[in-house]
Image (cartoon, rainbow, N blue to C red; front, side, top):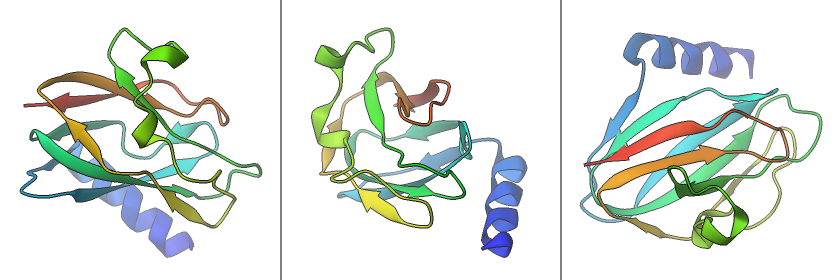
Length: 122
């Protein structure tokens, strides 16, 4: 598990952010540690995505919220992006498929809690 964390941190520091091009539904893997996501910004193409959230060392369940930038109240959450079950330490869970159009979005965990991180869809 320690080697996975080191590899993930190296990837994040080496790239600074991740870019994904979508032809069909792509899985975006995001890892939560205590109070933070390890990937703190994403640039994606318009398309369909599944978010897979893993809990690495958070001693309670975590979740995932995706919302349009500036509209983070629950009524604006993209409900299909919620993980299908709370994520316990050492496990992961996926969202349903989410269709993202061009624009700015934020993601965060209200259970952990984390800051809001940016997704730019081009």
